[in-house]
View 1 (cartoon, rainbow, N blue to C red):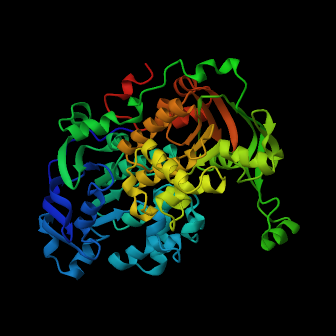
View 2 (cartoon, rainbow, N blue to C red):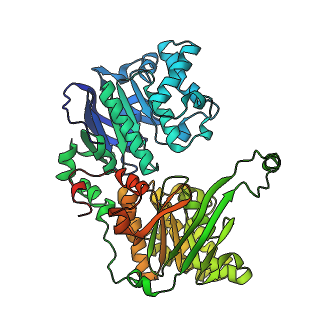
View 3 (cartoon, one colour):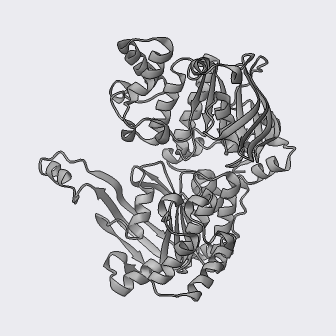
Length: 556
């Protein structure tokens, strides 16, 4: 997958001095750029840099209370001067948008087929039968398997990658000239991400479709974009051809984005405890672990279906075994559904295993009860993937961090408050945030609160489940560096779960690769990720987006 090599000259879209404000707060400031006919332009920057608002401004989809100035010209026409009816004719027909979270933008009461057929009927006047037939064809074009059956499915019945394909099919149904793709691959598995990028590139080449690709991942941008626009704090700070901008960035912020790529993370030295792991006893040993869902359901319907032999059993984990040595970082990688999070939740006893064993310091975890179980839960902590889901929205930061101390009776009153201040300082959060709730924090700040809460009990083993999957690359680098520093200062052992092999390659001592609930390969990170033995591992590695000019030196 490589970026288009041909040159585009005809300007299809021109954004001139765009400014968007919410009251006195200017979220986009004097932004200007162009998109050529048949060109793919990437917009990159951190959360809050104005990327998504800029795209919404092009289509006139700003939230209530927002005001804008400047000009957006599409094919020479000023979009802001169009009457509402004329603008509705542009949306979907001439310019379409793929939103970041398909689950939030697909109507849960509409079938997949209706999502794709509706713009055909609205803009092109298709009848019901013709729209349905074309919807099936479009879903096939975006490589959704069994489109004839899928058109009857609802969004909740699809995976994240499937939902994203439905959104793409709906967006391109009327053959628009410009597609706005807002973070279309964020939090997707690396293999699904590669297929989505291949699809966008195919549409560009076969249809001459112009694309604005919004992302915080420079690797994704470098894969398919002709030019890149870099935004920070609502301003365009740099723009230019992709290869030039990646290999010779001029602005300090662009240089920061590139230096924050996972490959530039400083690896631990060989003097860490992991270097002597062969001489140590395992801290954690997982033997022949299996987890099957649907075998002991309390749901009456599930029990009825099982009685009639029609209940569906899901073998989430199958006969898995591995060890974790004191002081090391074990990476667990694989696609969604490979069993990564199930294993983590089984280790911390949120899920009961169907068979097999988990031993911590030689003691069977499933045998622990009372005080021994409480001690184990203090020693083994987990940081969850989505901090907004794992933090109580009614609790302040201070309450979230002190709750474990109070529940385990390790501190009370002023002692707990003092420990909370130490933990916030440890994860580099200002004490001024202590009285805020999760909705008042950024994603990176919430993730730091989750880490602080997990560290409150001074655990020996910390399980980090996809904690950087949806974070900006600079915040991701800060979180990973923080974990490395904590591992050194707190003598932590880490299990780091991710689908991002670039991060795992830079961060972990050993790597375990999972597919469909089975362990397919495990070994030293350099061995597994540079000299993989299994075809599935090679497929994952081949799907990693790489920055131009850097890929050739990786693994040397």
